[in-house]
Length: 329
Image (tube, rainbow, N blue to C red; front, side, top):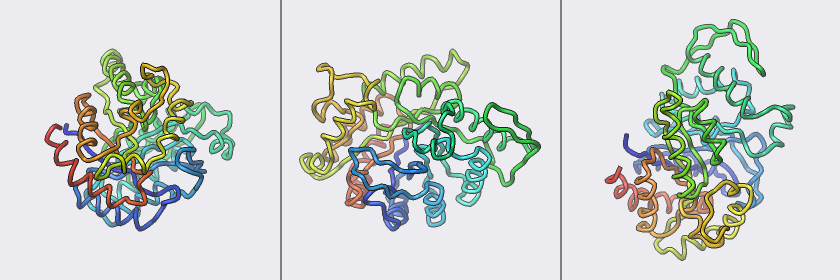
């Protein structure tokens, strides 16, 4: 399977823009990207590194709109979090897949913000177990004409849904911690960390590939979503990003389980290798090739710090990076 390349859309934050989402997706398809991606939140709380603007467009609404104006590009969730009732989740996935034409990429995580679950009265629910049960119900709803389910959190009697997805879709597990690898192996079909350093990624992937056969599972899909800034010179690419915020984030809870640099902490942008790709097209190609050497299946470029120059960065990636890295896939 050749490595695929996607792009995160500006449906959140200060640069949230419906025209950029719609026209950007059409352009991404025309430029040859394999996928476009959205995030999921009930109540959006931006990470400190990305400012305080809490604009956020629902991912299903965004992808439904994109599905209506594109025809081939894949529509990715990076990632769904378990704040929906699983029957509603199954209905929404079935409906979007039916209307958009069999091109969804699904991932599930447990979320970062407890306040979203508190708002729904799920404050003491173990989110990893909830996510696992939700996926079990969704997959059962895909598979069975009618089904009864009695779980720890959800119960239903003799229900069925149509239209349904035509085949069982893989679910990636989204997260970067050791626990995320265990959950991916336990109840998902792939592993999709967001920001993660290359050395940490390699360590996690080694665990995935070692444990999957022992658990009777095939090789899991593997991907990542690095923060990306591309420009004609590296200085400009770096200047447009809150590098200090990324370093602070890496030295906090986000990077608690990352492989540390020799100094023991993240002190310069080079320490973020893999989680942060920045520079000229040559620089970006070199960083992507390191992931290709690790056998990655899908890379999603996260341009959140460059959403104000979304078209410019997307064109550079498509014209100066993708043709070169596809030769190595």
